[in-house]
Length: 340
Image (cartoon, rainbow, N blue to C red; front, side):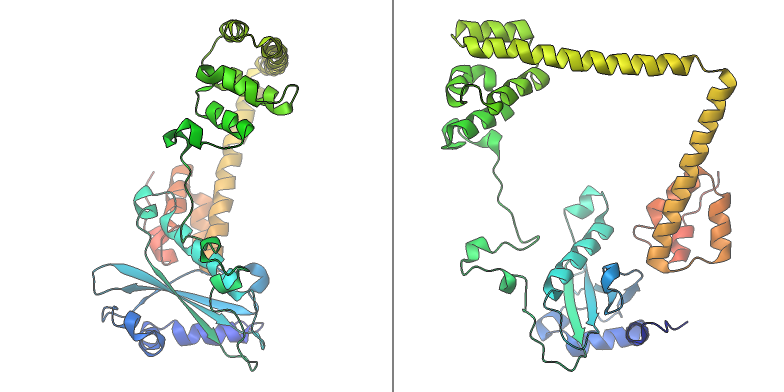
């Protein structure tokens, strides 16, 4: 049924939701260097929208899955801008939508995260005003130096502290000391760290606390090392930090013990009732999450689907939650149905 509040979206989807017309659109409007790589098969129309809710009235989108002659697949993301004047933020919005597409495609599967398919972004504009939007995010970044114009996903700078030489960690002595500590090598460089961290500073305390909490070192052994090196202030500070950590641990232990004692004192019937209520609440929460994800991707749910969700057990709900990540339609989601 047509959306009376957004006729632009209704027409846009009507035009491109047919695979044949969508294929013609790609052949007509993609550059030859890209169109020439497409296989003859028509594109697959994928369900779902990636537009920010606040922009749903002024933008429409459609995601197409296309086969390439090379034997792989790609996405074509068509974004229609319905405003009468172009929105200068569109390249930024488009970048965020593309990231959402990759996230939905890959989920948490490592193999997909290492081999993301290309996304070809196409913007359709039909407003009366002249198009004045930047051609890319790079054009929006206020620098003439290409080395400063990082784009989302285009790359990043890796600084692997563990693989670096000690002297290359930093020219700032305090930073260098902190990085050595993160590398779990503070015990071997105690003198340098003591010399690098200003006396009485918060950073000095934080470094020692990190060592006590993360390193596999006995407090007395650490104090002995500091004493041998003549770092008396640090030795005293270790004792203060240890006392604080001990007090915090005792407070947490006392609270936990009190809570566990009270819980054990409850009647068996009440405990069983709470367990039943907790399990029921978790199941209902998962069912509600499934409904929201399905409605976001595929629109209002038919009554029979609502009924199946209401009657389903936790394992079946989990299977549908996994399926909704990649399924192109409702039927595919519920084809994952497994008996109890």
